[in-house]
Image 1 (tube, rainbow, N blue to C red):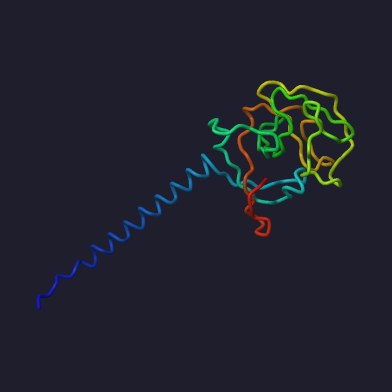
Image 2 (cartoon, helix red, strand yellow):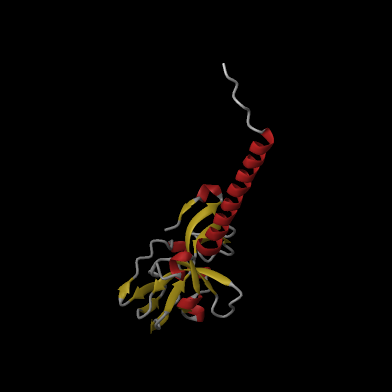
Length: 184
């Protein structure tokens, strides 16, 4: 019986280590690309989006969908944007009216283009009785409201949000674990 030559243990150890380093570097690069260009973790601060989002929840926002024009901003989207009056702050609100829409609020009931908006995401205890005269949303602007109307600083107070300041769509809650899941 002929004896088989044994491989060099030092060479196979170095190869395994280099392979591990290569795989780790690739994983880190992929994670950086995902976080920088596509998904970003965000902490919710405040109660203006209750009950959909609560204070201190952790969510992922999709930055890719609006950045490269692959997705249109739609009524009902939970968007993250630079606050129009202080661009060092980010806000998260729900899109209520799109460019060209006419929005009006009568005693807390929202109307878009003359029809009452179905807002099943706003429980009765979070509604308020504010009114707002009919206004048309300018081109490249969006009218946004918080779901917790009685505690939300939103388009009723400071106007519409320009498209260029919207940088993400809230898509997934990852903390706390009991609320983990896709946002609707």
